Image (tube, rainbow over all chains, first blue to last red; front, side, top):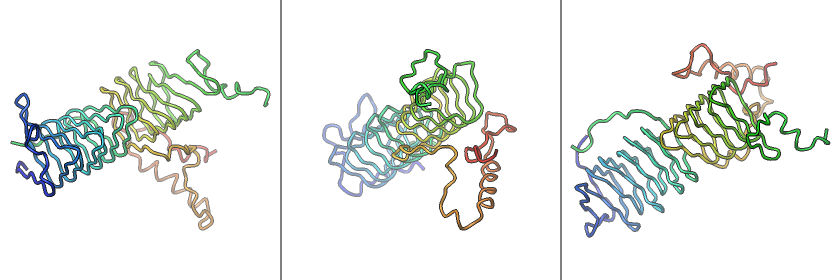
Length: 138
Length: 171
């Protein structure tokens, strides 16, 4: 399962200018901007910032956050997941999932810790507990 | 009866100085309190004790300070699961707050449907009742959920709470 399958089928996003694939404190970061879009499967060793439009499957060793105003139809697996935009799809947070006050999430979630701020909307099944981990990224 | 005015609606609530505001109940289940069964509240509810069963509240529900709820929760306004609260059950709410540290498992439904809160009795769907004799329809429906419910993992298997459908039908 640790095949690198980063596919950006549409617009080549996450421009590697300033922060596209920047290392910050030794942590790699994949940053999408509000006009970017990605369709496909992304397996990434680092953290991912989703903005704009995303569709597919994101499997991330670090953290993943979905910006306010972003729409994502993705299944997510990451350490910490923070949603401020709109997500349709399942979420697995190996540590914590945070839904910000404007977040809209519909999908089943598996988390170790959960925080939902007032104003967030959630439709789906919540399961809490230890997450089976099969090494992503390798 | 009309002379009693809004005070009549308060009669069910314990006026224990816990901030009931005009016409609304405000019920607090303290750390040593325990409820097994169905509770319907016109107002707000705060759970710091143990509840095994269904909660239906027209206002807000707050589960905190070691409060534990096992069962479905419907809140027309807001449900808060505090950092030391625990909720195992499906929830149907307009607003949901889960604080970091809280324990929560279940299905979450949020949306407009909460506007018309189903009274526990009326949850049996009433579509085309004329086709089959009512008794024949009701009996299997009442029996099914009771048989299908698997006992919650932590609680005693022998004591399952009655599903909301059967409440009020059997008397």
